[in-house]
Image (cartoon, rainbow, N blue to C red; front, side, top):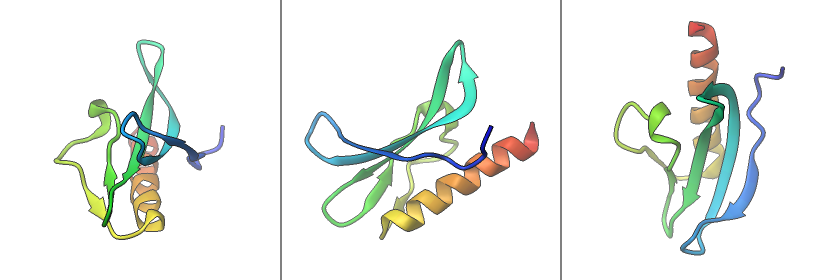
Length: 80
């Protein structure tokens, strides 16, 4: 299994761009979902509540957001 999150682009219910990556970790059969949503001036974390330990974070770029969530995922793997 690769530790690299695989991001897929889609649209949320309000028509905003969204990127989602499924983790290798599951809760009752459903994988945890790392999610980033594009707002007008920033990108915001909209991941599953099970993997957000603090208020949703914001970033200026998609690359920054994906790197931060990849680091979170890497930390989850290291703890396991």
